Length: 428
Image (cartoon, rainbow, N blue to C red):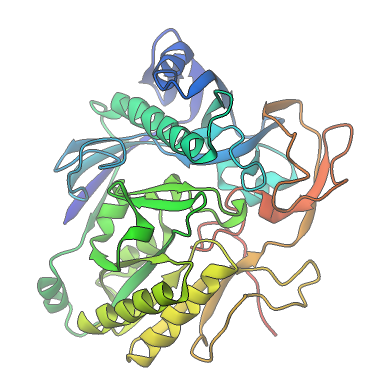
């Protein structure tokens, strides 16, 4: 598959009488967005607020972050099976509003949504402090069950990102990036002397608001499969979970998976990037055993020499991570793990909930237990009612002036376990 990603660079976002992109500025009509959102009877209130880099502004509780995109040519549409009709994506031309994001805001489970600060010390830990953010703040009708609210909130983000993406369709991109992965045998034959490397992408799928969707299918319902990397970059995977904010893989991060992007940069030079194995993170031991067996079988079957593995979440998913590592390594494929750590605030406890002797090559994305101070902000998008309950906070951490102290795991994507952000740790 060959995908051309046309980037329209967005340098600012402003309200306007009509939604359009002009001279690098995204103008949004808030009434049009709210009208679209309120088509869902489960949502009774909507407002749109804008957040720019460097502003004294705090956004919380954040559910998801998405980049506006549109399919210009090739099969399928953005978010196939989740929002639009099912159709294979990953080829043709896609345009994106690079630098702009849709941020969905509103309480779902409270303790598992995160914070984005647009300035101050916490901003350094979050990639979305540097993007032009269209924040959609939603309120559900009374008595709405949490799973229904999650689904409604998920659809809000997809609809608004799809709506804004349409305004990139006829624009001339500022930059075009090309990614291509050929059918397996052809791909292997093209670089016979380079090591064959793959990527194992573990999707959060534990249920109880811990779900991810592949072409609209709940990840916990499928078994490991092979896919083209460009499918992920083209909207095949959608976040639908409320895991710890620090390592939540938002829908934006599926579009911009750093492992896939870096493997493409090395492809044909010092490695042959042959594809992606997609798997889930299970609750029951039998499911963990079954899926990790199949992961090892697929890695061996397609003849990989090495594989990179990332997870989403921590604790229970660490067992899936180690099972995959052990079985793939024992199948004769070299493994490198990428994950964040939770060794306590002093860094002296065990970093992961599980381990195996085969896990001898690991890149760390940082310690989520580090505590920082969040100063007061001039503007709040959303509410801070749940700060003391949110993961990383604690009773009494919030001050009367709106400031608070918390572990950085309260920040969206601060230690994201696919390496997107800039933290790391070194063992001694």
